[in-house]
Length: 248
Picture 1 (cartoon, helix red, strand yellow):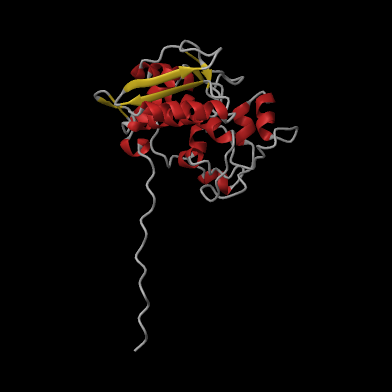
Picture 2 (cartoon, one colour; picture 1 turned 180 degrees about the vertical axis):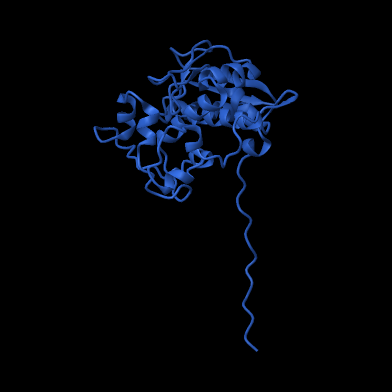
């Protein structure tokens, strides 16, 4: 690799105000460059913030691979049989809609003030009920909506489908497979792992998850994720433009 290009990368990150605290470059499965900014170090866990959402989605992929979740089209309410439906849109809400951030749940995420449903969620005594009681005001799949509600419902679905919360399921499956044994992850009042944030991992362990995706969901001799789930989405092929024939 071109060391000058790596040096330029570090200089760019140091001067753009991104507050970068560590950088790892992996090539062919090996660390070829690594740097930390004090007080961070190789042994310190980092707050992954919204990267947590991607780890939850990865666990959903594993649960799907293991048959613990029937399909991405499985309805959300099927995991919560005691929850009454609040309308036809909620009845068709499926796992894939949560993964796509297109749930249609009536929700105000930003700005983070007294009106933010994300902050109300954290103050709630029952996070899952707080989310399920919200109206699904837009047909699922119709509108992209980046909200905390979707990944937290996915976390609760992992609890219902695997018998343990997302953090423990990660410990037993994903993290065990990748050799990750030092992490921290908060839970809501009912014990569901927080789905939208709060995971703390060491940078080298986070790099392992990135490498898993680069390898299309395969780790050593095991297919950990469905290949299609790990593959980067492809741009839709352009249809050929055909000229209409003139009427005879």
